[in-house]
Amino acid sequence: MSFFLKQYFIEDQSGWGAPVNSKSRVRSKPKRTFANPSLPASLMGMTPERLPREMQIFGTLFEELCLRDVRVYCTAMGAIPNPAVCYYGDADGLEVDIVVELSDGRWGAFEVKLSEEKVATAEKPAAA
Image 1 (tube, rainbow, N blue to C red):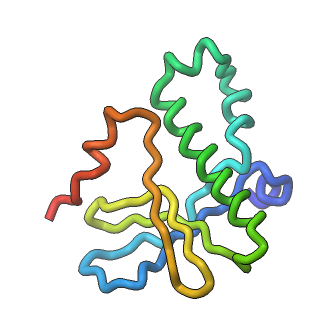
Image 2: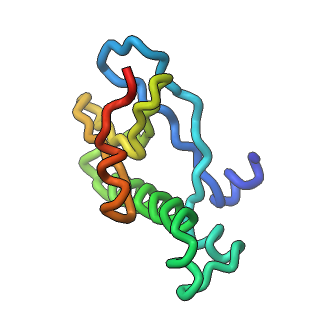
Image 3: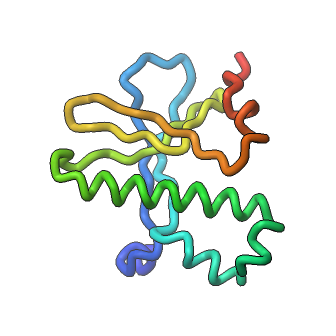
């Protein structure tokens, strides 16, 4: 894996340590993400004609693209020294795709969906 990290094929997205008390265990193990989602798209032969027919893959690549763009925007904003771009997930199934935490403690959470069909499922709270 270190070869792929050094060559900027993949990046680790760390788990976010939410500043709230949670009854459930929070996942903090890094997730491996592609530095550029065009790499796996090309390796899988995803042409512009094929990609819309493979909605699960399309959705995953779209999420990776959004994550990449958020990382780029945060890096480009000189006013934000070392912003944390993380994910959140807990043992109860509550998860958020992207969490940006600023050095002053402010944060924003973003759930990425490719279509409106999955929004209702994403909005449901985790089972109690």
